[in-house]
Image 1 (cartoon, rainbow, N blue to C red):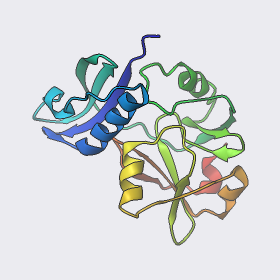
Image 2 (tube, rainbow, N blue to C red; image 1 turned 180 degrees about the vertical axis):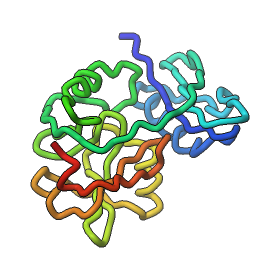
Image 3 (cartoon, helix red, strand yellow; image 1 turned 135 degrees about the horizontal axis):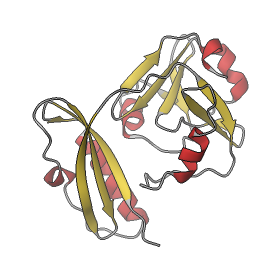
Image 4 (cartoon, one colour; image 1 turned 30 degrees about the horizontal axis):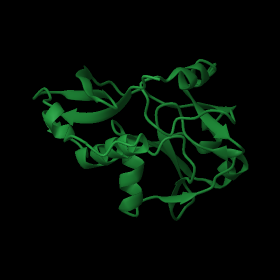
Length: 196
């Protein structure tokens, strides 16, 4: 099977953000497939010097395929449809997102979906999620994807892992989404009104 993988890296006015976390994930992917020889991602990123861009770096087990830059416009998320799927897998950031795209297509009036797997909250289709309980920000212990921003905030002690079930949502005061492009975006809407 010819799998291709990707890293999505934030670039603002020529500055590359959090490259070490992307490098670490890239290396974990290759190690998963038994490959020890890695390259420096920085050698493949030559960003535009003005503007906010999403750098899309595609590679496979043989090496890098392409690097493209896309002007970034944040997608506003004000509602999340709760969907249950015990078979969804996305532990590796594949370019093939068919399953996630199929779930996103079921969002109806929602801006995105919140995926529940085996009774536990995981992620949306584009971001990891965190919940504020009044004292700490908690993120699902079993996300679909261990995002680079999630990893960074865990390492810095700004968020903490916990198994979170749907019924737990009622005790939270705020919700935030996080990924490489939006960093840590707190949704201002009341959590009780966010989910549908």
